[in-house]
Length: 206
Image 1 (spheres, rainbow, N blue to C red):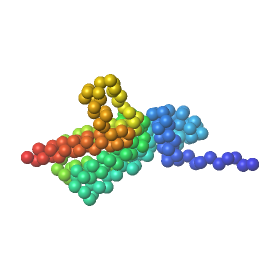
Image 2 (tube, rainbow, N blue to C red):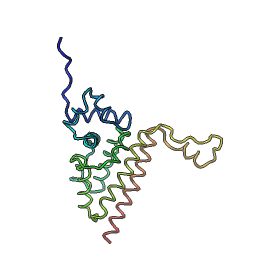
Image 3 (tube, rainbow, N blue to C red):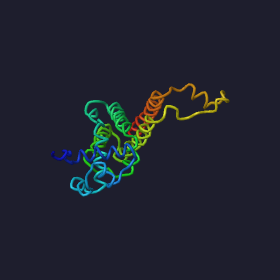
Image 4 (tube, one colour):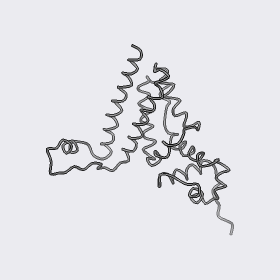
């Protein structure tokens, strides 16, 4: 009987395995990744030169579905909203990756392309160079929080039912539940943020 076939190791397989560990544990070590792949650590190094390179592969796999193509065909604010929704959706699928990826430098080409599209769109809209990164970062901060909220439990806050006249208790009773709660919060927050960006753009050109 021949040996069982083992899938050929490549960067895509490494990325998939590392993301599985991140989805499960929030992080990974190279020995754990090697064990998950049923290979030696040295075999991974043939394809990724160290842990930082594997993190880049994980980021690439998470962000590849973020779509910046709308900046080529829509007004900047509509395109920015489409980009924001695809960004939130991508990280909502992998919420435990946020802490890992948010603390590592972005350097790989795929991840940089996620930022190039909005940067070009904001520049074309007239945002000054020294404002563009701040606008993207402020948006990203909100979107990562919104992605975490999308994965939150259905009930995040429980108030004391014996105080029905309390403002928080009434607000909780009136709020949507489950995914609708997160959607409402996202739409309200993004609308407010985008309104602020529009006002900023108007002010810099007064």
